Length: 241
Image 1: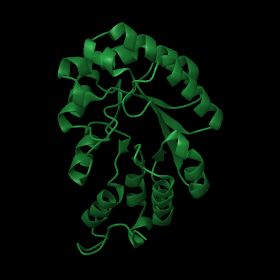
Image 2: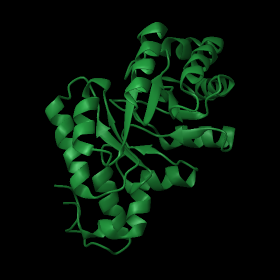
Image 3: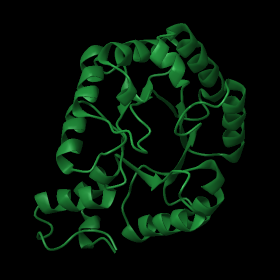
């Protein structure tokens, strides 16, 4: 178990900003079952559990409604065809998932084809609007500041306002990238940091910039550090089992 501090409402409120999960081609069904079971044992009220579409039945069986299920589309490279990605979106809508993110065609982002980014975003939003919360993934680590801002503008033009900065999986969101989007869009973009989010200090910074969803594989460690800050645990306590 994580610890008795999970009963503190401040800890639960803090936990509710996180997505935690098990993503990546190397992850097995056993991995997903283990991580989902760890989450359920923890008692933490996180926002969602992230898993691949192929692992959805296993995650749903273990969690049984304990947490929302977030399934990404075209993760992590975004290089499937638009037809394939929209087919996957239709499938996931039929599966009744709770939340998703969509990996845009990164070649359009890198080449600055903002009309194509807007068009792709619009087709996605036409399918899922009012049916499924959707964040558009821009893989910000691959882009410079000008491209990040232009990508966000193109996404807004396409009718979306949730931007996942990276997929994780080797790409991490920096404080500077979040600050850039916060500064330029002043709340018009719902920023979702993902990748290499490992410390309470990072999360503090993101929250100070209006972030409401943070994706992290280090959820248990970060929440334990938060509980210690509140004086609910000693340095020797905390961590997940």
